[in-house]
Length: 400
Ligand SMILES: Cc1cc2nc3c(=O)[nH]c(=O)nc-3n(C[C@H](O)[C@H](O)[C@H](O)COP(=O)(O)OP(=O)(O)OC[C@H]3O[C@@H](n4cnc5c(N)ncnc54)[C@H](O)[C@@H]3O)c2cc1C
Image (cartoon, rainbow, N blue to C red):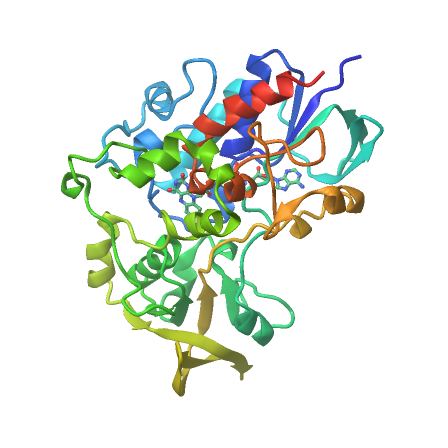
């Protein structure tokens, strides 16, 4: 009997990888809650920062692009760089993709993966145990929310949407903040868009950012340099190289790779958010970092300091939201057995991958965010599926 390949994750990367594996006639079982990050862990009313051309989940067969979805469902056509995609529509697209290609998708959690001889043994929360010849980890952002130490210390019971301190990933309905004072820590797109959505819902919002002048917005499509080559992220030589030659990132020294992942396509608001940010009256405290945080009478109180010392002062609010992103850490993938986790060669918590997305454990593959340390920032975005999925599927097909 040929053992299947197990794909853990039913977000854009898991769905796309499974489509490419099936396209090669490889038996696949795919697990997860389709598009759950987009349905439950992003704010209602959010617009995608990526343009339509960069928001297709890649499949080997025609008929599954974002535009195909628009045509099939009769909804708005997302086509030009000026068309903004609501997160609700993108989540629907992913579900449509999943339903049309994977009617057998299994909406269960994988609770453990262990190596047994030349295969893997997986346990599901349905109670089933089975063997797979290879495993693809495509669990995306799940469990990787990054919380600054100082904020985490204020809430020993952990951050929560209803408590004094939360992470942005814990919210979906921001209208609950109407009439409340909220501090958002961070200055990336997620911080800025959460701040705007809360302000528009009637909250009083302040952004706190470490870097002076951190709140900045990108250029509209017609303001981008015409002489630079096009990429899914806009026109620039660096973006072109990172989009179409991502495999070369693997050969860069580790500090350069980590810099690229952190900084390229890093904290910058979308061009269309600038006006709403200003109109929303969001306050900004920049050049200040959270030195300490505590909860007093149920309210969070932050102690802010300058970047290099200087006077400190306190800032209280009804709620603090950390929009401080995600950090890959293999240790957080608790479904991977201890033996597997210790056998993985990692760099800064991320698995080191070969050109086919294989890790140091033969038969164990990673795609999406966990692959960004090896392949660069492209892997943090949906358009990275076009690069990753065919390569990963080809590598799995080459397994004896
Ligand atoms: C606020 C915000 C806005 C963003 N906007 C954009 C954008 O505009 N454009 C863009 O390209 N990218 C955007 N991103 C990045 C985007 O979220 C990721 O690129 C994308 O979701 C990664 O897809 P994925 O398939 O790797 O993981 P996810 O979409 O996170 O999916 C993870 C999957 O893994 C499953 N899973 C997890 N653990 C298990 C388990 N143990 N067993 C079974 N299944 C499991 C989940 O059920 C889920 O199906 C944004 C991210 C955030 C946070």
